[in-house]
Image (tube, rainbow, N blue to C red; front, side, top):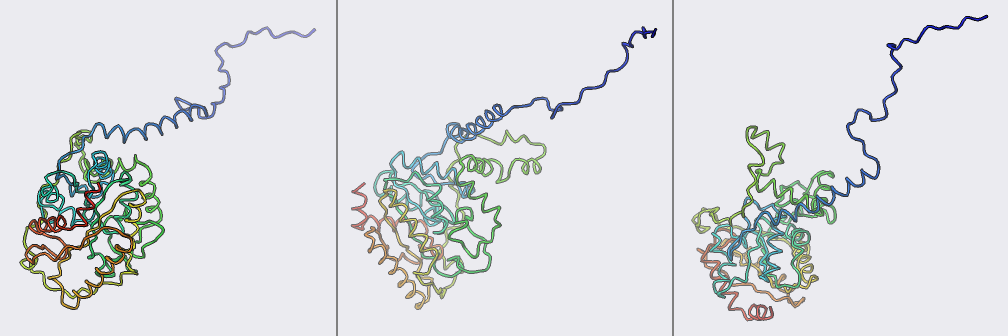
Length: 379
């Protein structure tokens, strides 16, 4: 007879541990449906944040408002100015620093004197420093989409066609104004050498409002830095304290002394100029005008006035040939335009920027132009 073991089991003996489930160290595990919900909520929040911020951060107003120079690359804010001009049926005046007013205050710009002479506030300054035609095309196509079915005044600054360097047609790498606005792939610029990853990021930024809004926060509140970089430079400051939900005032400070070009020591120049038909900048300006017209806008183009006092006789003659080519193209397209007469020499600050008296004279020359009056009457 076999004796059975009647020894009771040791209740204190350790049982073998169960294996940990996959990702068992995580406090929360989501299934596929929950991850989908999180993704959708994230997308909704990212889409809503820029629109919500527009309601929280006011936009400065006034007939002479212009984008502050420090925010020249804040294209998200620029788009807000364009949208407001559209909603208030103002006449957008676009171009480079000649329109913005490089040597003058906001009350001495072309838009100011046009409004003053009309006793109205119809014209709005949407000039952008350094916006050469290739950059202007990117600005209009990506950040001025609200410009539709409205009158738009476009400035054509022939200075961008005065040399291969300014026309951006050379092989050597050049530092570009508003590189984020130029074409990143097609057509390509040989002097633009940004790496592929950077170019792809710029294209993404153009098509995602939240990326533009993030860039606005960096420029407006964090000296152009992302928050981690800013905190490294300001380790004892609160980043949230930097954000002030107040309208950025218009840039009223003079950037340069108001001195005529000849008193600055600038001499007469034998500018070569380039062939109009092969000019990259001219092709870009034409595409911009075509784009504006395709959106139903009524375009008026102001050509110059360039400071011919600075040019040698031979260079002046080459410039006149170039200007005639621009005017011929505009006439062929039935686009109303004006080439205002040369301003007095002491009303130029440099090769293309007028001083205050020059802008006032320029505005009066436009008002005296019959074609300009007809364009306004059709508004």
